[in-house]
Image 1 (cartoon, helix red, strand yellow):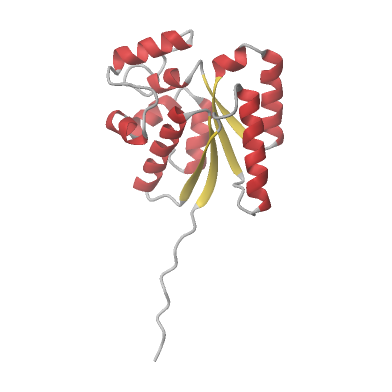
Image 2 (cartoon, rainbow, N blue to C red):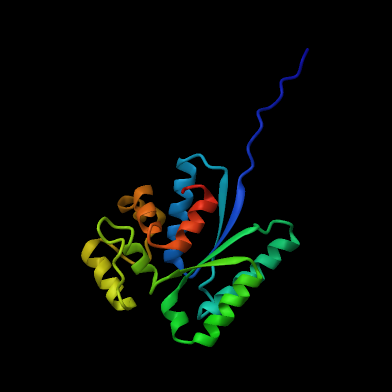
Length: 188
């Protein structure tokens, strides 16, 4: 009797996403849902960097430590991204430069949210792709005007009620770093 061969399961390529906080974790989860819906062989290793850190440099330092831990186990993704608010980097240009260098030295692409996550989220909405609020308060006010139900932090399910693949592509049209992430995961 001939044995049947079990069906092969396609391995999912891991991609690391370091997240500044819970809002970015929800967004990364939303991206994972888009990946699943498109049946792409990618898995996002989502890592919240906010607890115990205070600025972009300390968050990248945390990401580097966690990636080194994964390397010891042989599970560190080769493709690495971090979602960080740019307004914090602007406050201390020398630390921001150290952040960029440390990220580069560890092959981490920083997706700078200019000036913050809410502003990037705003650019997902119809007719708002080019909207560039000057600061975090302005971004939050503009987002709440367009999305009255918005509450920080939004879960992946809450984001999915308002956003879809087209919204992500709209934002990527004006966010080069987001475009790079979407290419990496196969959504673009």
